[in-house]
Length: 187
Image (tube, rainbow, N blue to C red; front, side, top):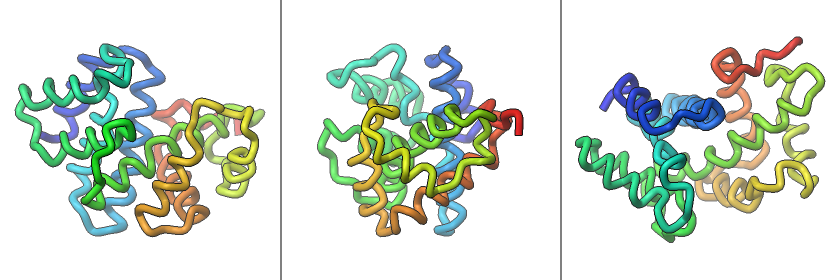
């Protein structure tokens, strides 16, 4: 499956602009790390795009992403991509064996959190977000309370990377798609 096919599949099942932007953010972070680790950028990007493709139609833990995996199999999506999508769901208790699986888990919550940090800036620009400001906001439990900070920390640990460096890497990846995310802001 290539990026264009993954995008079409995502758009078929995901109508929400915010969920599509989340997929784009995770795609950018996955692509960034694939490049850094010398992995298959296209495959890692597809994983990022598709990890939550079924969330609108299966928004509950008893169905997401398990039911989505069935759809992906019916569409002939390679099993390692499906396995990565399944492994990002903490409630399934699947071991994350590959670096692709570990990275998806590590960038998923963090991408959303970084976007939330950008949205509260007066300029609404991700270009002004620094890792230090993300770390500061992580300490504020009232801020973006739906984001599981423990998952962010566990994700960086699973990848074997320093949390501050991980936040900086993902922030830089998201800055690269500021326009697609609608986060160039007024800066």
